[in-house]
Image 1 (cartoon, helix red, strand yellow):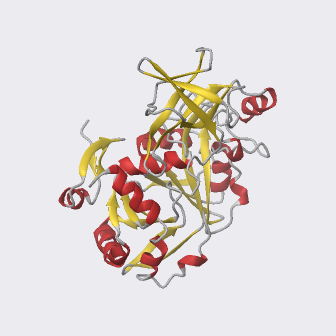
Image 2: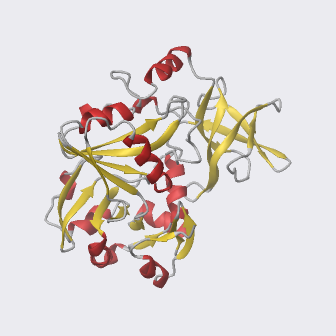
Length: 362
């Protein structure tokens, strides 16, 4: 199957974006270099086109009930204009996907899901929809720009009357920005650098993109590819679906106990509660390399005696720290901060230290 083009595909090509197939879409992986783009986001402001993400609206008097049944977090706790990080547990102890739940009103919610899981998530949620919740898949109608970095607010405030500084982290509003009406302006992002995510109808995407870049010019704004998105999220220790979490990893093993609320019944909650009470046998940890070397997904992790105790799920060279960093699952007992572990890189055993997240402390 050919990869789909996002709305601004030709614009990215014209900007020098190297396009690669990712999650069924042609996506810009980099424009200049991963390191330069990474530093731009940490120090100034950059824009990711993440229009491949999926969006579902759930509406009606039973919308919250459906969300409560399929997600692990407690969506009854969020108020209008608030977003919540959550996951969709499967019935085998693993995770269908991780997602964001946006509450517009008590009868209108938006779920934002990973691009590779759009169809899978839609089918999964639909099978629980036995009370007539109106579900609308608008994934092909919206573009999504993540404007991230410490100077994001300064740039965006120039093109909107919405008081951006009043939008708290994980909150959102709908408003006019860059001359485009009805943009969902969300204080979220997967970089740990601050900023906003802008959900815009495809027909207005280019207009908004151009307005954002004109406003950000004085701040050194740059387009940023998926390469830097990966290094930025890894420095924060944020999970990437398909790497660090998947259909076989439990939210409790993945360190997502904080989004797994047993104050309600949800898919497989009984089994997960039992797992919480009995304890897990492995845990996802972050680590920083002591020895020179770059950890990669799939590499084995060993203890000091050479016994294999786990494997790396994500790894890279951190542009902010100039050290190899990664995430991986290890057996319990090796999961506490400051534990020495050894990454098996080719024929070498390289020392790393289990480190409390985020790995990058700015």
